[in-house]
Amino acid sequence: MSTTEPAKELTPLELARTAFEKAFEHRPDFLSRAPGRVNLMGGHVDYNDGLVLPVAVDLEVAVAFTPRDDRHIRIYAESFDETAEFDISELTPGSVGGWAAYPAGVAWAIAKADLPLSGLDAAVASNIPIGSGLSSSAALEVAFAAAFRQVSGLELPELKLAQLSQAAENNFVGVQCGIMDQVAAACALPGKALLLDCRTLGIRHVALPSGVRIVVLGTGIERQLRDSEYNERRRECAEAVKRLSAVDNDIRSLRDVEAEALQSLLRHLPPPLDRRARHVVGEIERVQLAAAALEASETERFGELMFASHRSLRDDFQVSSDELDGLVELARQAPGTVGARLTGAGFGGCTVNLATAALVDDFLDYVMENYHRLYGREADEFITDAARGVTVEKVGW
Image 1 (cartoon, rainbow, N blue to C red):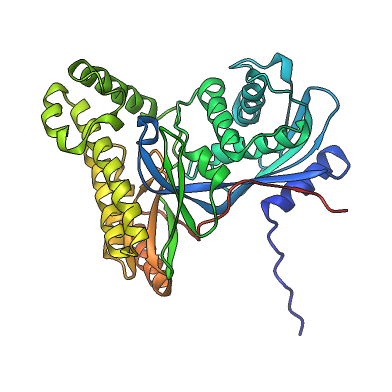
Image 2: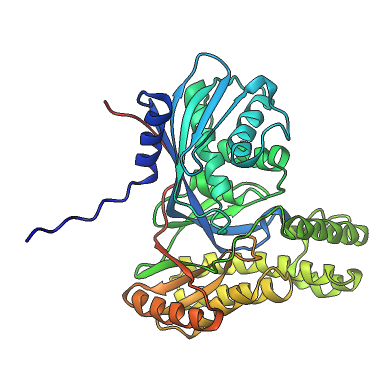
């Protein structure tokens, strides 16, 4: 009697390399990869100059690429079986759409920064679910930023790759994201959360507790930033700042509002601006407390802050959904739970959970069974540890 080994699933790097050889009929010279991310704490505060605490995850975008001797770019997307072509000198916002807008936007942002930029042939593959709240777009941008850096011989630190990637998404793609996702994709370290000050771009790496796993649970409802209220929340925050700065001209962003002064200032904000400001100011304080809890090995305290963050995102910032709330409540009741909250922009997507490593299976059994019972659909699940940010390697022969 013979048994057949199941086929090994290819990694994104392997898929990208295979796709490159299929599309261009020769081997690539280099491989770049950038991870997705989940944000443990700090929802919707990155574009308010706040503090955030993301980690990179073990899902990634991979790019196999070879430099060209002109300024032409050809990209084959393995997931869509599509090729996009464009010339760097002809890029303008709106000139490229769909998935190709992200790498095109990065090329445009680099060129707009007056940096010398060479063309490339590339193939891209990913195992980050699109619309899941794990920031596939930032990973795509950062992976290509690293590829352009390589082929053009640019001396750019990872933080600068993140800034150029954010510029691409803001000004070329048209989504007004903050910089957290790109910094996580570029600068994360394995085993650590990344405490990022979105005003100064200062970074501190904070070790995660041993004996816990990060569990990402997807609602199964895709989220589209363009079609959501994300840009509306940004507008509301900006309007709150405008009104508060008329009261105190030292307030340039909601980061400048001290938690102790918040209550007296809220009377100057009509609904729903008062609730938006209350969330942002409280969330920035929660991030500081959460980082301190990690550094003091106060894991239970960290979990309490995760639940408090979700309540604020649900009630004051109003970016949750029935399914996200259901996942968080089920996690609260499940064995092994440390903490849970929605991650990403909300409006669907995922929750991030910390669970005791020894009880992860029991945790998942409880949440998955009851989520299906309540909502009639399966939740997506992904278990990860904190991963490394962007890397580039030369292809061996």
